[in-house]
Image 1 (spheres, rainbow, N blue to C red):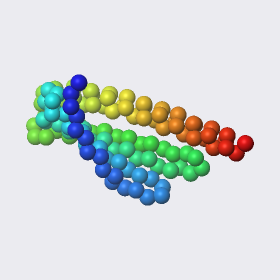
Image 2 (cartoon, rainbow, N blue to C red):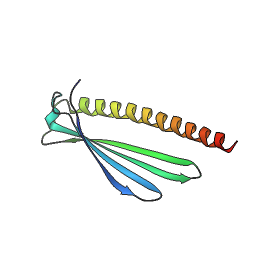
Image 3 (tube, one colour):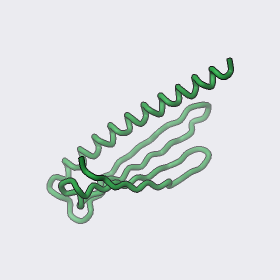
Length: 107
């Protein structure tokens, strides 16, 4: 396990959507001082108990890219994809639980 440092910023917030930008650095991994992981997530209210999550990731290399930049990018994309699949599952599970609680309270 390696230490990661993360900064999250709310880039936009209104009644229809909010956008979170996250920058992660991993100085303890090989070539860790040469890149940052930039992730942006948009949560968009689609109306009547529906929302859409849009996520993107970008490898930002500081200075010259190392020869293994493609490996770093692939590992970054795989890790972020796994994270967002898990995050989406948790959000859906929580939303279903909230809906069941609301329906139960109406009875």
